[in-house]
Length: 370
Image (cartoon, rainbow, N blue to C red; front, side, top):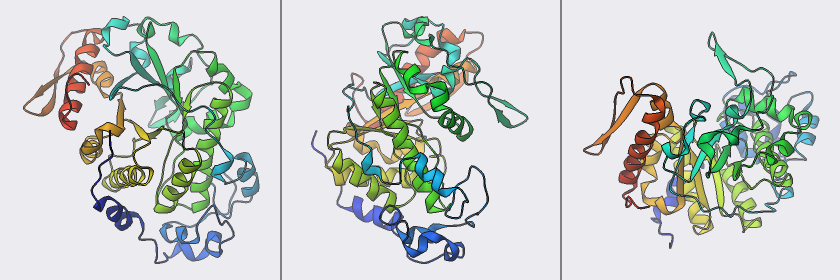
């Protein structure tokens, strides 16, 4: 398919993400300002800072962190280009990929009419993270190595989405070597894995951004080196991040698929940044890269309907709706939920998945055979 974008795509991106010319109050004391982190962090990135850069020990990194050097060493420096895509993904993805929780692992594979399905990182552990009194508690990170032996996964290709809460992501990162995590994952039989979605929050110190972006690439390298077909995860909070990703993609021209975790797309500003960034990268790469979006909200989907040839959507919503004994009805262009009564969740997941797929196809105006 030939890429056709409106000429305004680049202009829109510039308007949205280029406005980092005026310093903020907190930017005046950020060490990034003097250019010491060039070429990996642009001095103008400080103009987006909306909170002070803390110089105290802890997990939140900033330009003033007393152990900053060790954090930089942990990710083998801030340079993206020392990570190569050694084995680009060869899998052909459908437009829609259902993601399921462990509640459905014992279901018959025929319950979900899709050759490719996804699972989340938290569901591969014997003791999954749980919330108590509003806080997420994570026990021992013991991998349940035989999950793909469950009935649901028979004769299916399974994608591991290495996304989750910051608490879980950070714990897996810290224990990667102790768990021999990459090697153990390679034995499990996943068809594809995405790299981790280390958070990048607008307004925080640019050094924290740079380290978390590089962490994602390092995890990508860990999995590839273990022999797992893996795709990089892209995040950005400003145009400088996008330019660094574009530079990496130009150095890795064989990369044809990247992932984006869209859990923060419910916020209008975040949604616009994701959508405009995708359009910008599509234009700059000439449409050679496809985007696997995990969990996009309707507002984000609506901004990308013209680019369905380059978009793949993976989402857990039909599974979660089924888990709460609800059923979808798609009527007059709207997706509605109704009480599923006493219908078992195993019988709801299939129809709900198909109805949600129909809703997406209608949104993107593509045929039901896609």
